[in-house]
Each structure stands twice: as structure tokens, then as C-alpha cells.
Amino acid sequence: MRTTPLFAILLAFCPASHAFTPASLHSARSSAGALQQSTTTEDVTIEHSHCQEPGDRDILVRAARGEVTERTPVWLMRQAGRYMAAFREYSTKYAFRERSETPAMATELSLQCHRKYGMDGIIMFSDILTPLPTLGIDFDVVAGVGPVISTEIGCEADVNNLADASDVDFDEKLPFIREILQTLSKEAEDANTSLIGFVGAPFTLAAYTIEGKSSKHCLDTKKLIMADNAGTDATMTLFLDKLAVMIGNYACHQIECGAQVVQFFESWAHQVSPKWFELYAKPASMKAMKIVKDKYPDVPVIYFANGGSSYLEYQKDMGADMIAVDWHVDMAQAREILGPDIPISGNIDPTILFGTKEQIEESVRECIDKAGGPGSKHLLNLGHGVMQGTPEESVGWLIDECKRYSSTASN
Image (tube, rainbow, N blue to C red; front, top):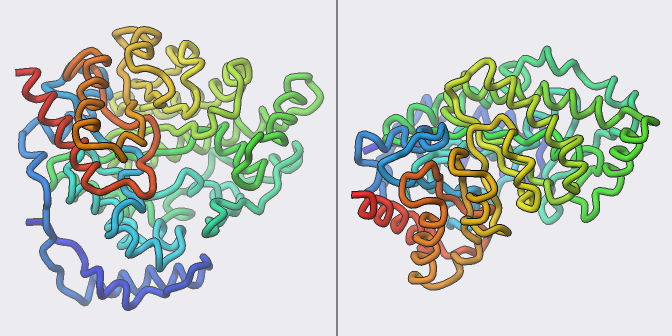
């Protein structure tokens, strides 16, 4: 049975600050490091019976590459989240960046859901905004508000004043990433499953930075897009290019630290029209993904445009190994648009997890069948993240049914 640092002792020593400060984070990291050296570990409980077959170790990776697999693998966006009581023991006491940038806590939060449910992948607990400080963009995650970015980007000079994206030392700027991923890599091997890394796509990071926080209309961002398109201001093109280089290199860094597959999150795809997606968001993501594929051609890249299902046809030639689709499109229609040769991920409506066991199981079977049947270049997921308030047992029903149905149907 695998082991983990004593959570209770970690809570006793980490500062209970709700506002991130470098000092408090350093204190938390120091306490966690000291505890790992000075305390013993205790057994953890594995609550599922999955991940026992030899092929389970890399079935998610193989599906993402486009291979036909012995069953349909499954993981869930936001599988490490506040729907779990064990997760809330941390989230109610510690600020987000404190949790995500303290290796002991981030590792524990990444593993909780896998110990309970046995998905086919462990994903690092982090955030798409995490690498922004490497360029000199400051952010915090404020309770009740969400991410707030204090660095202003509104003109070409602002972009030019940022750090050189091609010269970022991620081990120096984000030392916790290597420690988290290397630890999770060992845990994934012990658990006979895969390790998933992830990054934010350039447009989403640009829009978040330009708006400064979550935005209903992204008006400042769209004004810069239109000015760029009119040829009067190149801020958007310059910013997207800089972000694409940084994000591509950051994804490579995650692979070098142990990630076996990387998902690109275009979380604000719903904010752009098909035209602006094709002219701005798509080329920037393609540039970032090309950096990854040129350096690590065998590591699969998944691209997810949340709210982008209305222009799926523009995503067929993204350069990604797999396209993840949101829940606003029927899986059969998405498969028809993308074609049978493009691996697909998704796309159960997250609210079904508030339904009955029978409704959840039916949704699993329906999604797998519409994607082409068990093992047919499909990675089962939700069409968005697990929602706060989702009953914990519902997640288990989804995972169990996917593995039961796709295993029996393929035999």
C-alpha cells in the first residue's frame, strides 16, 4: 500500500493565511519540507479496485495518441476539486496559491481523487495562470472573486516590457513544479496510471491578463483584437506570440519533469467568434503546440476549447493529437465533424452528476457509443469540470460504469 505525508501534521505547521504572500508561502514550503524529513508516513486507503491491468498504466496516453485501446479510458477535468470533503480540508484553510505552490499540499490534492476513484490519469493540482509570473505578470486568486491580475497590458510598450519568453528558467521561477511533477510521476507509476500535465492556451491567458479578472464580455481584449486586425495596434499579436513561446516551453518543462500527456485549456474560447478564433486564438495555440511536438513528438497533446464547439471544424488541423469537446455539442455530431481519425475527448454534461445512478450510467454508455464504441480513439471526460457540490458517490458511479461498460462491451 502506498504512503503519503501526514496531513494532520502538515496542517498544524502550515500558516493558515487566506491571502497569498511570498513570506507565508515560503513558510508553508519550509514547514512541509521539514516535516517530510522529520516525520514518518502513514498508510493511505485506496478505495477503488481499478488500475490493476498491465495496460492501465498508459491506456490514457495511448488513446490520446490515437491508438485503438482495449477499453475507453477516463479522467475528469477538475477531478481534484472542492466537491471532495478531503479537498475542502485544505481549500477552506489555505489560499489557492499557497496550496498549488507548496509541493506537499499540491501533491496530496492531486492524489486524493485517484485514491478514491481510480481514474486513468492523475493531473497536477495547479492553475493555468501559474506560469504568468515568469514573464513579470503578477496575479492572485481571491476568495469569492477568482483570479485577479495586477499587471496591466494595454499597449505594445506593455508587452515589450515583459520578460523574454524564450529565456525563461522554469526551475528558477517555478521551482515547485518540478518537485510536484517528479513526486506525482513516482506516484502514478506506483498506482499503475498516467500523469497529466496542463497549460492555459495563449488567447485565454492574454484575455485574462488584459481584462485583469473574469469578464463577461472581454471588451478590452476584443478592442485590441479589432485594432490589431485594422492594422492600427499590434499589441494583441505581440502578446499572443510571447505567450505562445512561453506556454510551449512551459509544457515542455512539464514533460521533462514527468508529465506523459499535456492538455491545452482554451478556457475562454466562448469569448471569441469563429473569425477571431481562426485569426488569433488558433494560430497562437498552434505555435505553442508545435513547440511541444517538435521537441517531444511522442508525447500526446490534447486541445480543449471550452465554448468552442460551434467552430469544431476549425480545430481539425490544430496540430493537437486529440481534440476535447465541451458538452454543448452532441458527441455523435462532434465525431462526424472531426472525422473518425481524429481522437476525441469528452463530453458528458457535468450536471448529470447531480442525477440518479441510472442516469449517470446511461450517459456514460451513450457518450462512449456515440464516440464510436469502447476503445475507439476516445477518452471519456466531462464537457467541463466537476462542479462544486457534486455528490462524491456520483463521480464514483461515472468512473465505475466507464470501466465496466467499455471493458465488457469490448470483450
